Image 1 (tube, helix red, strand yellow):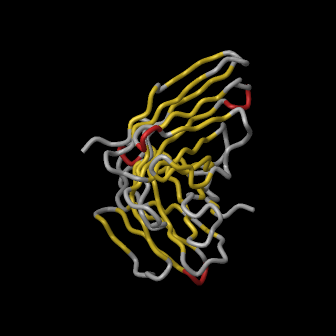
Image 2: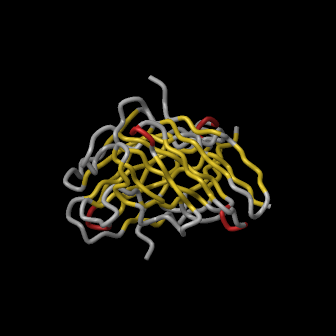
Image 3: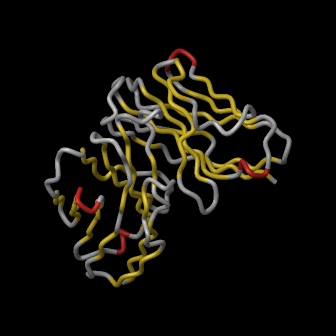
Length: 117
Length: 116
């Protein structure tokens, strides 16, 4: 079963628009961790944020913000005033403390974001 | 501090040949992971080393794949013999401490493998 769902396959926005990337996860563990990674055209996965299940406080880092809602099992990512350099594939991932694959990240399929001038 | 490096960046081989991928983790990181993404699919976990020991290899697809981590430093992933369905991008990641699921995994740029 899919543990992390990123329903948006591709999103295209014009520069300076705000954009939200959705992530819905599924787990039976009470302790788990959620991540967002960015994959620019160069190919490497760049870590953006880690959140544990006990901390529902939203986080803001510059133009990036994350909204963690346990009630809806969502961990959405918003880019404010998008820029062309934000164009990349963004992956949401889940790590479950009680999993047999205890340290493995379960990834969503990714959302390809294109920001045009 | 150098990040995770992988070699080669691209590899094109014919079905039945052997390919060896290499990963150098961030210095001092005990944990090393291999993942792969085949076309159009999610990035999938392959296996996890803690130092030189295989902690979890539940994601390895079959016995054509062999991973080693000599001396707890770099790791190699050998595919022998390669099949068409092995084509994809192979990622390596590392994280610092043992037995900490919360530790962030830092990824390398990946090796794109094409099997013809």
